[in-house]
Length: 294
Image 1 (cartoon, rainbow, N blue to C red):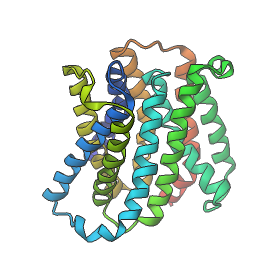
Image 2 (image 1 turned 180 degrees about the vertical axis):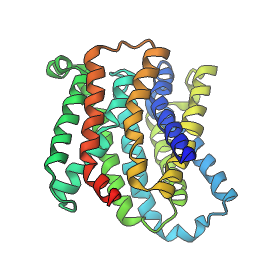
Image 3 (image 1 turned 135 degrees about the vertical axis):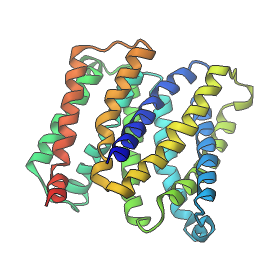
């Protein structure tokens, strides 16, 4: 259990630091190029891990179209939304929007697909979590409809795509080794993002510095490659419920890192908002908690 908890906390920290490294790079590097570099570095890292673990990647070439869809929804859409959206919001605020994933999953499975039973506690958790997100972003900034709202909508749109992808992956790839799935869709994501980067940006002529190169390597190797690998490690060892605790820690680590490293302002209402979000996500997962205990 100590190993599982340690891995969970490390993965949450890696994913929270995604927003820090993005902020560092976006000072001089264009958004799509950042994500292209992140994808290709992560792909080679997971490809190497697949070879070391002797995963049979070639046996799944017939499923290429599934991995292509995963690459579009689960990486390309969310990463582009995140890259452009974070130009308008702080790293701390961006990290909090991650928590919309379990909330959106509840909405889709309960109200749209009707694959999960309606729950009053879950619905209350959804409303509490949504209110907490509004507190973190700032209700006045949302009402103003300015740049902050634009950034939030871009990131939120990306996480809508990510949530839909997560549900599809659970249906289409439940019998495929997650390491194989991740390696394949990072392969296709590298191609898609590379094509977009070289079409709309000029990756080779950008002012790369030691700081941006280091941030890019950290994004690819740790936040993406090691993050995905660690997530699937605990997913296989402890299941979906335990791995969902990652979403409790990402906003805490993200806001703390933004405050300490980027000197972002954190107000009391945002702290209350984070607490509300964690409570809301817990209530949304309450039905799963009952199933696990029973």
